[in-house]
Length: 297
Image 1 (cartoon, rainbow, N blue to C red):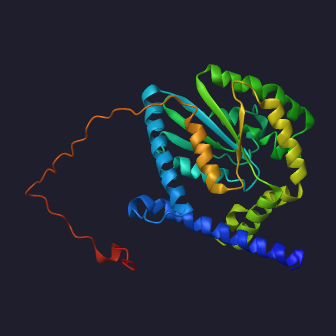
Image 2: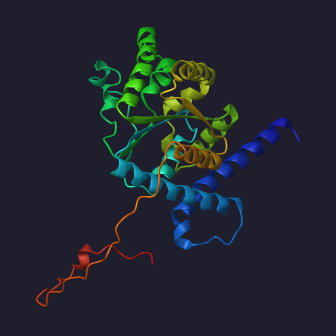
Image 3: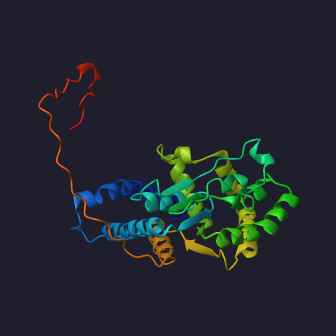
């Protein structure tokens, strides 16, 4: 078997695995409802552990609200590293009023004239809130540096400022946790192929993503410099090995939970009140023209 043919077969297998992972995402949503835990496959084990960890996240959420904690979690990594996947699993069963995601677009003309951190400060949590940054102020140390969107002076000013900025957040009572999702060159290549060939995922690919493939080594240098210059005791970096998506999700969530001395919060029993029935109440029929056709079910 030629090297080219073997490589093609490996790529096909990776594409299949990626499609299966997409299907698994749908299974995750219904697994706890269906109660289908009879098969002792790796997928079922993964689902079970994910649901257990999500239960712990709910306890953490209640504790954050009850104790008025302020939590910020940064998710950084190369394109297609799996940041969005773990963010989705963290927020999946949480209250969006407590735990929200900040995924900022490129700065507009006005924002480019502001203090660099200004637009991020607006998204910081109040007491009893958790904010997950899907990419963060570290854009300056990554994509902006590699793609030439900032000059050398702006780049150096970022590194002078960010340690003090994060220390200030810590002094204000914010718990700041920083994750870098690490994948290999081959794995990113395979995931990009999966996005190219899957119509449901093509929207995830941007011209910037494609350019990032060409500049893999430039991103490596930028990442190494970033971690070296911003790994501080008040806000250290944590590296998640993310080639295996499912393991990365579980490992990240488990590690996140270890940062907090949370405990289950007692809630008062909920009594469902009886419905008030008014003998004069008449329910008016809905016109047929307003009814959604029942194609399914």
